[in-house]
Length: 425
Image (cartoon, helix red, strand yellow):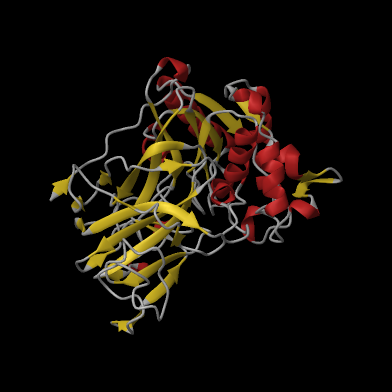
């Protein structure tokens, strides 16, 4: 049985065309610990998850994560295929399913606190295509590492269904798995259960054209895609990736936004120690290495973080917030990245303590620093893209999801359109 640990991605290739071959990230998800009360236990079950590729290529590799788990996770089998259908479908296009191997073996262990990278699969990933990744967990397994909000419907099913093209209730396994997906209950769980998280999954890379590199969107719930349509890939990083494809610009876009995430502070520790706020993720400063610098072929980072810091009972000063961003800039540039700063969106009308004269003034001061200081290599003015010209502290109604903090799908499109593509040409 193989036990593998991740090797860091190659960060900051300012001129990626000099490297061949290139392995670039096409999809990523940031992982967190779990609050104890949210921990699931799986056994003899398959987790089937759908991911949306940004850039195309071949020989995909999948990165599994147990970085916040206290116990090793045994993988009995895993597979990868192209998705058939849209929306909540987890079906695989017949003939595209590929078993994943790990150092040549079909089974492996994800070490506690570590990651596991598959061997390259014999599959061509189309630009903007969807992949279905299946992971069979034969043993009793506590899920200690997750991406809390996927905005994509995934499923957990009874038995080893990694080879099945379709998983559905009442089909007796929907094909060629060793366990039935429709054979009653698994303990007190349904044979097929829809979930709205990613479990033990943190990235996919592909072998791509030499000109390819990756852009990491590093942020909070706005970057994660809060309030967007489920199963639609309407997060602003997804829509930016579509613009790049339309412009024939070879860039993967990796979304490492975490809802409720803060730049300066956050929960620390594995599941069981991180507390009830574990899903907010480690602070941006703490997770920057894992979620940005370690991504395969990363060349740019777009940073949109700080609004949740302003909403704390004792928020940081503007100088403290700027100092945190300066630390990200310093570390990113040291790794060779182009660091791009995003202005904070307006939040006028949002419930709770976030919307106050003091926090509005801090937001304005921070945005002025981003725009005028020249400390970031470039700026994306997300604020200007979505604000109401008649009430600049508020989002334009058509761009507001209704809670006055998170953009609607139209607002996400406006954010993606605000990113100058010439930054990546």
